[in-house]
Image (cartoon, rainbow, N blue to C red):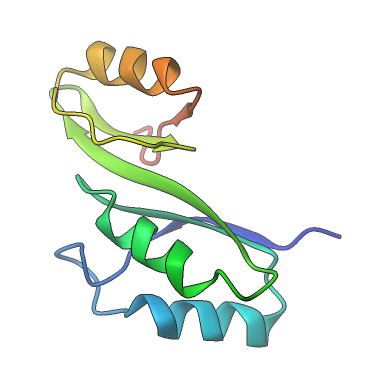
Length: 107
C-alpha cells in the first residue's frame, strides 16, 4: 500500500512554520512513502525537502501551489519556477515541464 501526502507546505510558505528536515523525519516515522511539497509560489521548499531526503527512501515530489488570476493551481514534478500568474499559461508551463496540474481548492 502506498502512503502519500500531495499538498504539503514548508516554512517557505506564509502559512507554515514546518522545516523541511522535520517534515522528512516525521514522514519517515509515520511510514509515508511520498510527499508532494507545494509551497506557495516557490520551488524553494520542495527542493530543500528533496535535498533533506536524499539519503532516505522517501520520495519527494517537487511542486508549487501557484496563485493565479482564476484561483490556485498546483504543479507537480516541476524543475523550473513559472513566472506567469495567468491560469492557462501556468497550466501550459506545467505541461511543458512534463508536470501534472491539480486544482487544490476547486470551489
